[in-house]
Length: 455
Image (cartoon, rainbow, N blue to C red; front, side, top):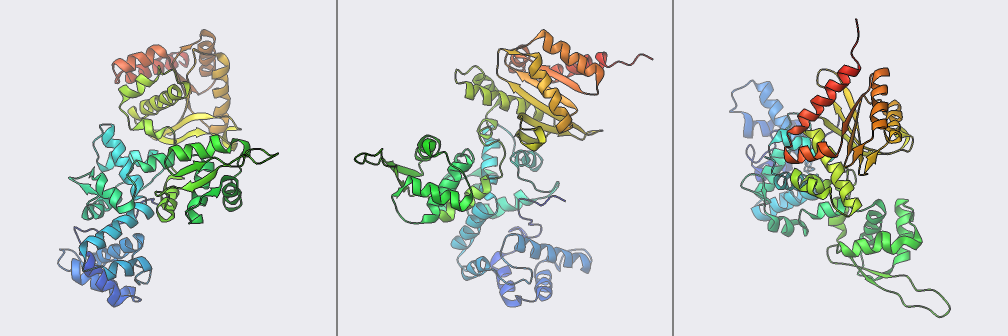
């Protein structure tokens, strides 16, 4: 069973228990998990109309929730964090504020908040089924049917982070962690080199400034990241300055030598105890540069397809393909898959479906005037490595006649299906998003005609 990325919290909810009293019970019975469990059962679940066995299970769930939230250990002893909460049990503001900060920084809470903000920005109703799908697309898993996000929301609501259901109070969030929720988006778009450099600079702790090349050497030794020394300013330093994490001071030219390296000074928001856990949260997120587009409505993504900035237009095309696959309820697996699984080639998107039978969908986005036979052949070749059943090619241009003939031949001779979405289709979807169903039905009928068995 896949491990949840959000903490278990069943029966550990402010609607079911009183945190100050629960902390007192843990202090009283710490070291004897059995006695603690019985005390919790008597305090909160003895009046439940169910068997004594089930009452005990409810109390056990409370204990497991406290463990998942890092408040007690397996022996029901208060952890260091739990003792901090216990000391503040009579002061509700600091108590719930400390718990909220812990959730936000250490338990994927900032990812949850950002995902909720993305959903609201995209006009999506925030409810558990949709939230689970959006989190999964970001690489964050919690069990089907689990209430993990709802219980996190209730605790964050106690600290004023969530108000009126799922609405985020940005001022309160910033007051708790020093950074707004969109900072997680900024961090997510940083490269591995930029993240390693930031972590190194934050861990150095002092006000600086430091020679940029010395920070780079320490980052390489600490995190094993290789840097292109000649390209360090453009690839790492300038983006970090633009994001507001550092200030650069240009070195002076020494006699007979080249220019000295930049001096790097960390800015106030580069606080190690905040930055480190946030970077940890984003390092496993998917599609870092694609994710900001996914929160935008379909119409805005479509408008970017005509951008003169080819990178921007390319990302918009990938975001479009992502949303199209989601419209037909496919499950996201990976973005820009590259490595041993693909022989070094890059596949833009991988989706799966388990309705009736399992299928894997391999999606390639082409922001070019024309899709050639070679483009299709490359995707067909990758299906042997990825074990794909369906290839989807989404293009802002035309799909050439030779490319279509080759696709038909492949479908005739194999069990593969190839779906071609060209410029005209994209324009049709732009006018009517539900048109994706008509396009997929058209392609399915074409495949059926090609594969028709004559009996």
